[in-house]
Image 1: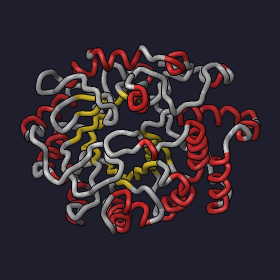
Image 2: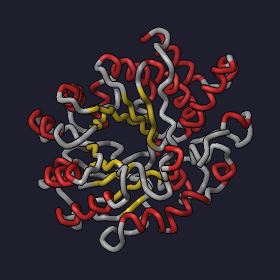
Image 3: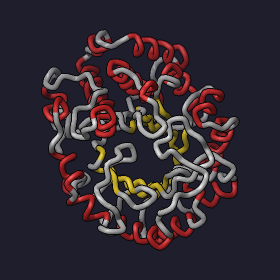
Image 4: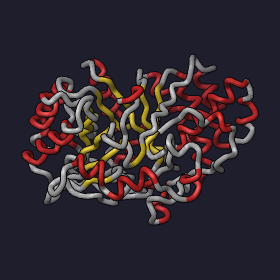
Length: 385
């Protein structure tokens, strides 16, 4: 890796494997539209082992292989797959569902295989989270599982979806994460796909407000990154720039009522910020640094962009990632404002949201209000490729 930079065009940083669509939850916004039984065509154990070999084939340091679903614990061979990945020196993480399968014994066992785990917690209010996840009592069990993973020495990340049902409670969510000792938060900007409803999406101005709020929230000892919300990275660089110039108040004046309401309530709950921001600004994008393998081996730029570039039963993952037309074009030929934007190498817009709204994965991100060239050039200088 030249200059310490990850070679995104040559290998992904994150490989998400939808090990199964089976899951016992009934999540309102589920991308996988999970079901209780595996679908026909699911990769076999042997095919799963070959997939792990393909991930190893990218070379050291390996991409991080994230076992997701559905619920990966619904696969009877999950322990064999995890063991094989570990024996091949692949860094792994897992995103299990909080169901009766996630027992204390399973948590202890997982601690022997994975470096990190992510669990979904969407609201500080149990009734809201449980309504989103479709099963009463899930919130309480999730908080307990987070505690058990931490006690077993596993790095824990909380995943939360921002949508109409959850956005107003973001300040209280930050407080909850602080109270239970969570230091890494992945915030998903909902995409109308699968069970995700378009009515749950926010307006572009509201997404801008949320992004500015999350940057400030990262000052409270929580590392924050986003899924399908790459505009957060542009916002982070912008706020940092104006902070250093002592002109942040000018930027805040351009923001809407949602930001001002959220930030005021955050300050009321937690007081002034504790330290420097921990806003994650690594420039991974759909198809550039990120790849998603479905339950049946189809390869996608992300789990929220339903355009396949091939199948690992027919071509190697390495060949698809490096040479497929879809992946190559996503890295180089964006349209509209995204194609002209000086932040395209850091942000690039959500390809999944562009496709969901326009049918064109190369179109500009409809959630972004930024007009390319309207900020001082030095903000984007040094981003690189």
